[in-house]
Amino acid sequence: MKIGFIGTGKITSSIIYGIFKSKLKITKIYISSRNKTISKKLSKKFKSVKIAKGNQEIVDNSNLIFLAVTPTVGLKILSMLKFKSNKKIISFIATISLASLKKLTKNKNVVRAIPLPPIEIKKGPIIVCPPNKVAKSFFSHLGSVIEVKSEKVCNKFWSTSALMAPFYEFLKVSIDWLTRKGVDQSKATNYITELFLGLSQDAVNKKSSGLKQLVAESQTPKGLNEQALKELQRGKFYSKLNKTLNNIHTRLNKAK
Image 1: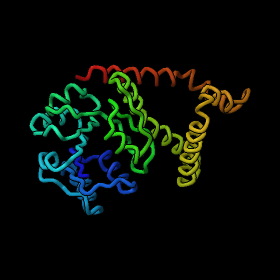
Image 2: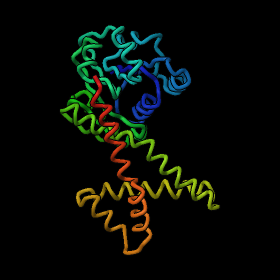
Image 3: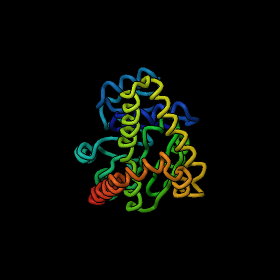
Image 4: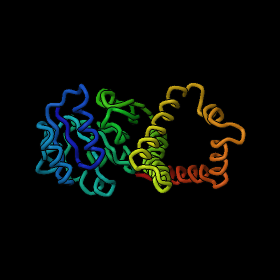
């Protein structure tokens, strides 16, 4: 199978690295030169990756085409490209709806997907909307596929994907606090990253019992975790998190 990426940013790079760690049989990968640094690095590292002369070359030579550009760029370039009816398109563009994508590409074989950077190590969830055999088959090699029928539901998942940068910032703040207190940088980084890795894995293993139980079990009366939770609650940390998710969800629902 030959695939192509219109847009060569972080997520494209992550998927390509993931592909070469998987059992996917891809004969050729066409990428755009929009990000010259990333595209040159990918073509140099992987023989089957080719930098296309233009986006139409990607479309013409690929069986499966991934749209990995910003909404502004997508609206500008997609209507200028010619997609044959047998081409299959997977869009990563958050604020362009399926209806608009089909209209812009003049193609009915369009699905939306939400891959995240951990796909590089074949980890993490990938939302696919609507359910699609080709997309599911491809992404099942790179992570855990969750198919949803409704774009309304898809937008809810897309809202929570915006927690990625805040999560990393949370880790950074914790590490920086330790280093300011005199802890060695490498030890602080190892501790915090391993701490949250362990907590996340524990949550996955015990998801059937519910996170509410884990929240309760991790606290003791007048203990450190109880203090931390109450102080964050008083500071409306979690209320602000809910408000942020609602704001992002509202923005996504306005997509045309």
